[in-house]
Amino acid sequence: MINLESIFLKVSMAGIVLTIIFAIIASIISRRSIMAGIDKKSGSKSTVLEPRNGLFLSAKILTILSLVFVTLTIVFRAIQTGHGPFSNMYEFALAFVWGIIIMGVIFEWRYKTSVVRNVGLIVAFLLLGFAMATYTKPEPLVPALQQSTLLSIHVATAVFAYGIFTIGFGAAIFFLIQNRRKSPWLPDKEIFDIISYRSVVIGFPFLTLTIVLGALWADIAWGRYWSWDPKETASLVTWLIYAVYIHARLMRGWKGKKTAILLIAGFGAILLTFFGNYIFSGLHAYN
Image (tube, rainbow, N blue to C red; front, side, top):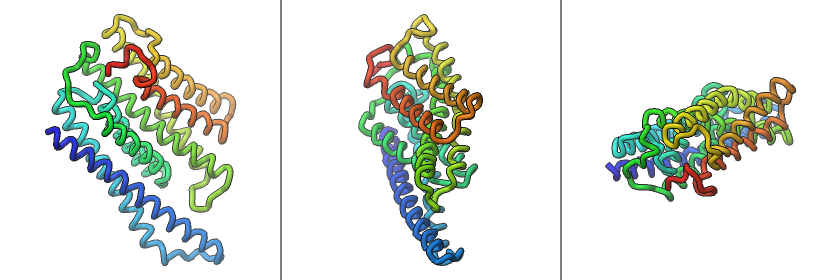
């Protein structure tokens, strides 16, 4: 069983690497095609449509396959441990990757652009590398983690929130790129602004639920809802950044560069929260 988990994990990594390579090649071909069309003042791109479509289709298929194999890795891990992916950083890194990929697929389907998915895949690749480096054998749960149902829901909401915010982070980066120097081979910056906003509108309730469920679990595990543990504090800072984004967008009318910078700061806070076990000591540092 452990061998199957390892095999699926390595295949997942290979699938993500190939997806990124295919996406880069497809983007280069697409860019050259569009630039050639601009230079010739011609709308004809028939000579490059077929390889471009083939490469993009291959990247989509590989993305789906990577999602399948990450899912299988998590499933086989759960079969071995008897609980969801929450007992250590290795398991949660796998769940984080799953959330990023599935949200990338959904946003690509909704907005017909793969560039934000590709940023997510780069983050997923780094997280899978981290998971491989920090592999931990299945072990019995420590007492504080034995409220598995509540904890599983808590982690699931975090996975969805983090996955969605990763896509928003990618959109914010491309917005800044398009805002500074408009590239004809990328979607308009307004598309990235919309994706960024929708990511927060969808992800913020999940993040809020994550904190609420975490407080309920903390009361069961430690006898208090909030203890200002470093990871709890980091999650609160993350929530506040996205709350400021929503307030600034809806009440102050902020759009564009300012909100994109807020989203990048928010994703930095997510990474701080995720890796808090290694940066800070506290109740969450079970390892």
